Length: 263
Image 1 (tube, rainbow, N blue to C red):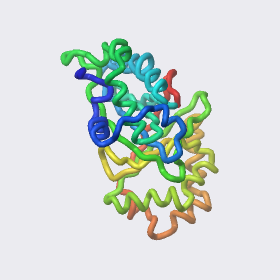
Image 2 (spheres, rainbow, N blue to C red):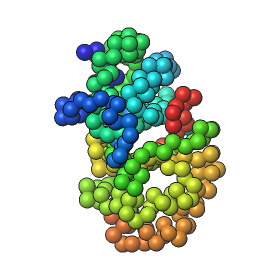
Image 3 (cartoon, helix red, strand yellow):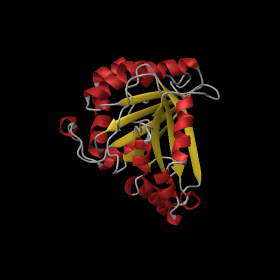
Image 4 (cartoon, rainbow, N blue to C red):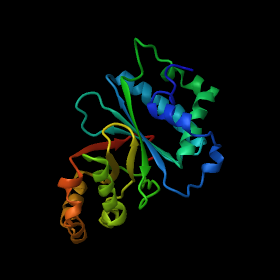
C-alpha cells in the first residue's frame, strides 16, 4: 500500500472499506436514494504544495473519479485566505456502496498510481499537504441529489450549523426537510448545491450546506430577503425551532471554484 494513497488518507475510507461490500460502479449510475458526499479540506503551507495537490486533482483524481461514476467533483479555494489557502474538495457519491467501490478502485488503478506518483509518494521531508480533514455527509431527504449551478463566474458559501446534542441536530434538519426551509432558499434564488448531515467527521453533530451567488452584493441581497421572508419568519417563530435551542455555532466560508471544478 502506498503511503500517500488518495483513498487511505482518511479514516472514512478505512471504516467503509471494512463494513461495506465492494460493488461495481456500473450498478450505481442511477441514484434512487439520497446521495453521500465526501468533503475534504486540504491544509497547505506553500504555493508548491497547492500546485502539487491541484495538479493531482485536475489531471489524475477527477478523471479517475468520473470514470468510476462520480458525476461531480468540486474544488474550491478560499475567497479571503488568512495565509496559504485551504483547498475544499466536494465529491458526490450515489450511495455508500458507490463510495466503497470507488475508494477501493483507487488502490488497484495502476495508471492512477503511476500518473499521480508525485502526490501519492511525496517524501516526508516535502509532503504534498500538511493535513486532510475529511467528512462523510448524507444528503437531506428533501434535496437528495446534488444540484450543480450554471457554469459561469460565481462565488460559493459553505455553511455549517453545529448543535449541542444529536437531538437538537435532528430537529434542525427537520426544519429543512419537513417545514419547508429548503424551499425558501430555492424560491429566493440561493441556488443551493447540497444539504448534508455529517455522519462521520469533526465537530459533530452538525449539518453542512452550500449555496451560491453571482457576487458579494448578490449574497447580501439574498440574505436580506431571506431574513424578511414571511414563510421563513413563520417557520422560525415556532418555539421548538428557535436557534437558541438547536444551534450553538454557525460557520461560514466563502469559496471560489477553480477553473477545473465541476461544481
